[in-house]
Image (cartoon, rainbow, N blue to C red):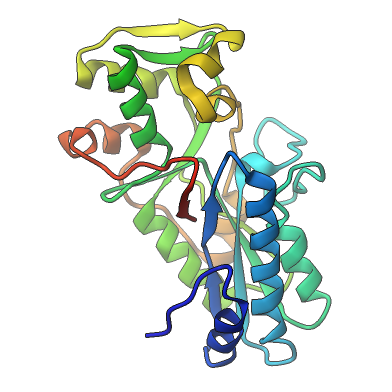
Length: 260
């Protein structure tokens, strides 16, 4: 076992040098200091890539479907990442590709769900408990794409084994679940009212997650499925979170927590 951290660049470099390939999923989820987290991510990608130059061994970098300049009704693999967004995982990865590293990108949706989830949905559940209400923004018809964590894991393996340099793959099973449906499941499970919040009220209710709660980001994975033969087979977001397990004590993402 080789242990390290995103700040320990020597450890990252030696680990990559002795690997058959690298899947980079870590990110410091400090939403109160996001620019610094993005810088640490870019440095980590550059370090991992530098150890793989000319080797033919793959580096799979993680990005997100919400970070894209969507050109159509669904975000696709052809859409570019937003240039003004602080996180620059894709740019850092493709810079290494130009230096001869076999880099591909897996873009994940805002919800990667399943047992052990410590992401946005558990945080929404905690907020509903704290506030005594489960909320959505406006009409709640903004869309969140989603994927089960086991389907996402299989996609990362396929990208590692079959991914081509410069490719972007979408780990999307549900193209877009209306946020209101998520809020309704949470409200029913917690037996609290489901309410609408105006955009100006979102920050007070949701805190640091407010910008994500109101975003509309439907996405497709059609090209990924065609190119890699990936097929999501596990539970949808709404059926997965509508289980008692999601409403037991969980480890939530906080502004200073680490994760993908």
